[in-house]
Image 1 (cartoon, rainbow, N blue to C red):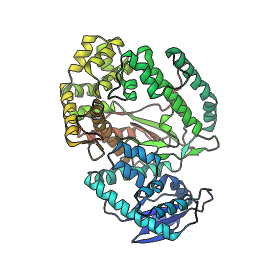
Image 2 (cartoon, rainbow, N blue to C red):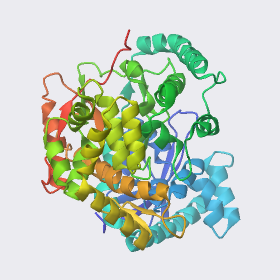
Image 3 (cartoon, one colour):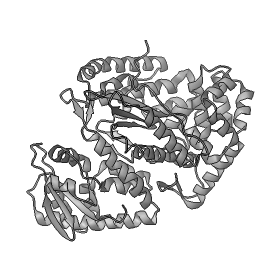
Image 4 (cartoon, rainbow, N blue to C red):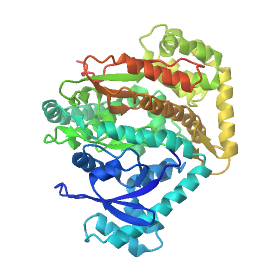
Length: 519
């Protein structure tokens, strides 16, 4: 795949959606206008920008998509190793960024005006742009090869990008009656949650900003130096359930935005695919961000006529990865038991009712929470102090692995989850506590993202199955009712086992996608 012929694919979008889009290929130093059918039949790699904008039009006209496309924005962000570059990509696309990198500012302006239909089409401008983008792509390839990212891109990321577009391009079905009901209720649900939160914690009637959260928690003894707001909310115990309350409020606020973005007039939605949705290379859908839907609102997604939905999820995914990477005997033993979080809850709380709290405690420990703070947080939730101390003291090999991972990050200035996907340091000197946690997270979460993408690719022979929605470590599928979705469970589990060289055996299961609100 790496050595296949590469063409620059340019297009002129018909923003009025009347079907008069135009398609161009720049290859062998010449620009050629082609039809949608010819584009779909083109062999080799097509490199373009803003593929999300034109893919639905290609599919509507030709009934298919080109077999191998890569978006310049995605490739550039995915091989940069920089958090800032990935954030920057979301603010400016290639037409805008060209003004910073093309020697001729005039060419960048002319191309942008044509692309956005401000000016009439000019073949010479498109040909010059094709030449520039071909050279720009060559430079990206050279940099990616030097940074150890080429194999990851051509064997994982580009195939996943095209696989997801192939599955998603016909759209996700929306049950408009249920959407209408949720739209009519969401403001009441949101403002009720907001009012309760405000009254309980004596805060203004608004979703608190990060600064407001700091101002609320710092006088209570919380130190935010070197740690993020999200880390505190997710992993640290807070008085009066402040963290869990604000996370619940944020979830319903995010779900409200998704519902607002979905029009009742459209029965099917084609989201934008972001295969580098995070620094660890998680997949996200945008416009709308379906992953932000609260479980109580997920029933707006429905199967196509004659099909049904299944939801396959990895079990104890991160714990299994940590166990395999560190080969900690205690971690391996617990992972191989039925459920590590239940085991922890039974050990320190004396029952399994606090499994969710036990899970939060374990992951906070795994990603760098100080032992004393961890023990204090567990005791506040009713745990036995000595049992907590004894439980976490068992992971000596895991602690050594974390220390080695951090030392390697410090020495090299970058860290990888394996098979590329590097994260580069953006500062000098000793690693901060935040960087240490980020280093461990990059390895574990990045490995999870890689395994997940491999699992999606390993589904390619299951032609009766359509991927609808990746959800972090899980995936929503559509298939005929008679199809045995346990086949996908097996593929997921086997992919994890194989990637981790059978140091652990992968676990996956069928889970409910939608959960009605508790009464």
